[in-house]
Image (cartoon, rainbow, N blue to C red):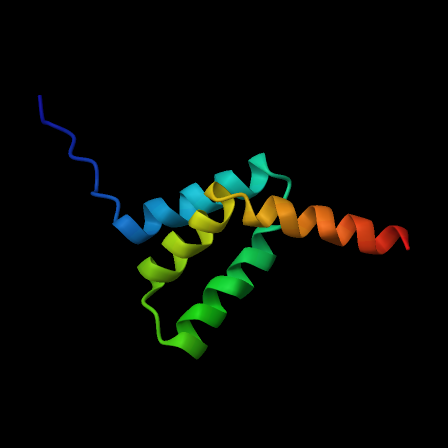
Length: 77
């Protein structure tokens, strides 16, 4: 009987999964967060890991929720 070895998931893959799950939980489009992550990588020369961690921090700090509230208020006007 052989031992099944699962491939090790990279930190970046885990962060991507966490971001997708967080977007779903907060009813936020993943495509918008991907755009933001890509901006951090291409414009600020961050690593993908840094960009994903920062994007997640925006959720954890409540910034994304605040932006969504402001956006809803603006759309009412």
